[in-house]
Length: 260
Image (tube, rainbow, N blue to C red; front, side):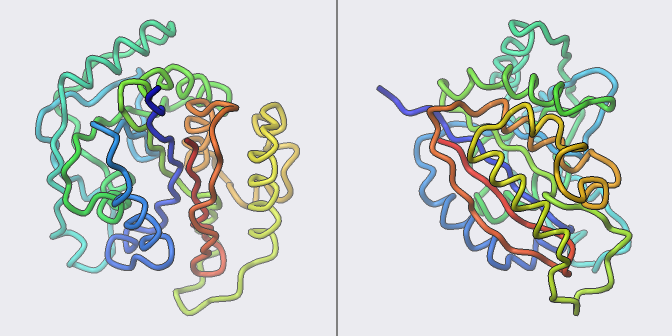
């Protein structure tokens, strides 16, 4: 029996992750070299948010440099992975079968939340990538439901990849020289990891009230919501792996996960 394609949650960090791989980047490169049993990637990031659920359907999506004030070399980077109208249609079918209204988007490119980690995971850009938007009014429950709707695609050799950040309080950024991890980052990250390992779904969906320092770790939720997409796409039968526990700038957790 064929093993379902994996589910990934990747903390994509700052755009500079594209050229500063660090521990997580090297882990992703190793993992990518082992991904020989997938035919496509469906990706959800916090940087494409729409009122109505949309699925990118163009055959050659553009690399979007949707960030400002970063080193010029970042704006020259391209990630020329193809799209796939055929996979996009499969995604739309899965969403519709789950009762979720969604439409194709023939113009949407690939935002940096997708292509930055993929530069490490699949540096040859050799697998079709289909992006799915995150509803602009999503909650953890709705993001989990989106993941449940995408889960059947795993049986079709389609990997579900969501990206965000396990902590994301940019108001606390004090520069790249800061290396001491803020205690609340450790507390929040350990709580999330333990709850995932125990598959405490109700606690995770209520993380805003139950996790330590939840509002400090995420003043707004959009960078954590993709984690719930990944949780929804995973199953109790999946093995759970922590890809990296790296923290950058003392406040940005790069902790990332795989289920398979």
